[in-house]
Image 1 (cartoon, helix red, strand yellow):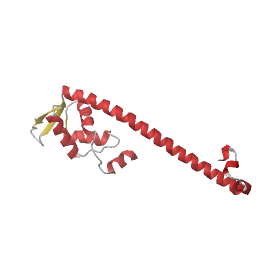
Image 2 (cartoon, rainbow, N blue to C red):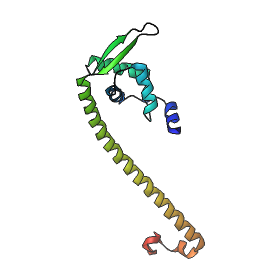
Image 3 (tube, rainbow, N blue to C red):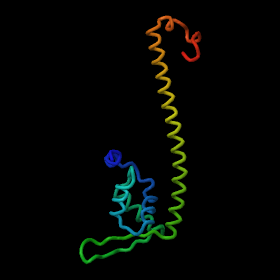
Length: 154
């Protein structure tokens, strides 16, 4: 829950995958802009989209034929524009999914390498601290050159 609260307070960075998320939600069934924005904010762990990004994305996807919009004029309340995904939008959703799969693989590689690097730094610091402790307890070890020490002491 804390991550979601922090995500909502994070500055909006960009909406790089907003269109993909909107297509994904519209694949569930027709919806309107405010409801789609609410779903983005509530369902995605880190939502970087705001209302301007959502409505610009919806307009662009409608112009591109990925979604269709129709106005609903209720007897009371505000008119709403409902959006539905098209066959072309379904194809684009599949293409977006593949793009995200590839990006995910690259990001996993990055995080794995980053974690390995952090672990190596932690191990190096721990070994240095261990040596410093040994030297404090054994002044002869401190006086001995590094090349004269056993491999596990270096």
